[in-house]
Image (cartoon, rainbow, N blue to C red; front, top):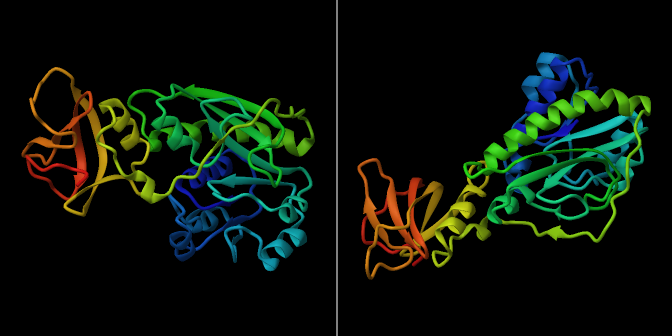
Length: 299
């Protein structure tokens, strides 16, 4: 397993507890995770120690270092599974695997639609209501491998990027536990992807700036799509950054004549506050730092 995230850690633990032998962990150091911006990073040291799984820290997150490639050539693994490895696997690594590498990718659409970066975030931002999680044999390309299984689950009005990752973890654990023995034994018949592909672009921390001219629902989706473990949605006040971690649609009938979009209308003793949006009021339930009534956000 190549993994370095909380979701990957949970998947690895589940597989080991359910009798799936993992021969090796390949991960990255906390320092490298910070440099490359690996969201949701979690070390695998505790699992390696508890289950006696050898662990190697990759020289490069891309695995394109000659020592990293040589390691895979020497080991001759049957199957590679990934636990939150946010990089494409190079052809030189995939070529060393007897069966191949298992890719996991989902969006609101069936592949080849919705390939690319940040599909969890984009699905929430766009207000989608389902998520299709695909399992395929990886190629060096972007999510274009032959699919051997897929599952669907809801994207509901209360989901955040964190709860979607929980759902992805639940589904992935069970699918891998059932399919790894079949893949090792050659008992699978993957289907090529058909149709015209579409691609989501990558999202960066700077893309989290809130546009208060958007509707209340759009801003709510935007905030829940980028909460922890991501850097978060944010706004500004006099040039100072304000992180908004949680919010909820509040009301469409209470009127504040003359209020500006992004204006803080009321602040409660709990620190929660109400913001005027294009089509209603948004209640911000977790943010930092504090704000005051009458301030206009986004300035």
